[in-house]
Image 1 (cartoon, protein in one colour):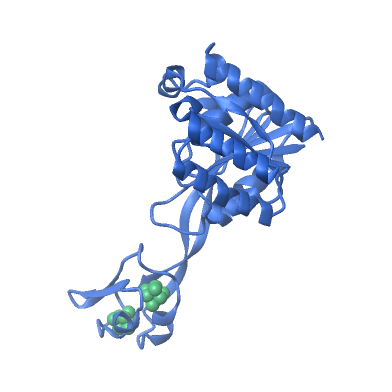
Image 2 (cartoon, rainbow, N blue to C red):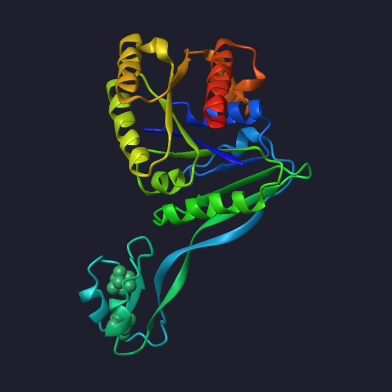
Length: 290
Ligand code: SF4
Ligand code: SF4
């Protein structure tokens, strides 16, 4: 099974719209949404079952036993993350600030502090009756370890994909942070959806470095190219110099907003953006075959 990951340098460039259209063009039987901070691919992929849900434990957080706590304040005094405070004679934890370093556990003279696994999010696996697998997850507000969760989402898709799934399509996280690095490893091709702007060019260069470091082949397309033909040309020139396949451009198309607002894939709407995406999809498929 070939694995195609779709990335962008930041949110709002059309990454998920591209992933949703590709899913439809490929009739993909294995897919994953690795944008665990803001997953939304499931909204346009119409899963026909409820997901199997499991907890994601991202680390540990402190729990205070109020029966034992004497309110001495020793733990709060030494917590480097200001996660503890004494209120009404007992210690309270700010779960968003606690880093689970365990200093307070060792210091507490009353044995009132312990660390407990923190439910940092939830994983969801859709097993559709027709064999299609869709893996996704949601990270809770203020939690880290998104790279670990992305790896879990990917592994769930790979483990459960039907044997005849020829192509898996993965919607990645925006940016170049930990979740992106976790999603890039093991891919056969990364397609970057670039924005025709100065920042879009800069984001693209950073993504190229990330993919090259991880030795994963990369290709590029530009969304809403007609908003800035000059920047589109500059991105195309950059790709040519860096010997990166440039797969095409997608025009600004009001049908894209219509598709998003009605929960449809752009592949279902007869419009110029759909035709451009189809051409780019075919070029990506051809790259994956070689
Ligand atoms: S060190 Fe222990 S007893 Fe003292 S305030 Fe902290 S939790 Fe309570
Ligand atoms: S585990 Fe570390 S970060 Fe969390 S409350 Fe204790 S000292 Fe502070």
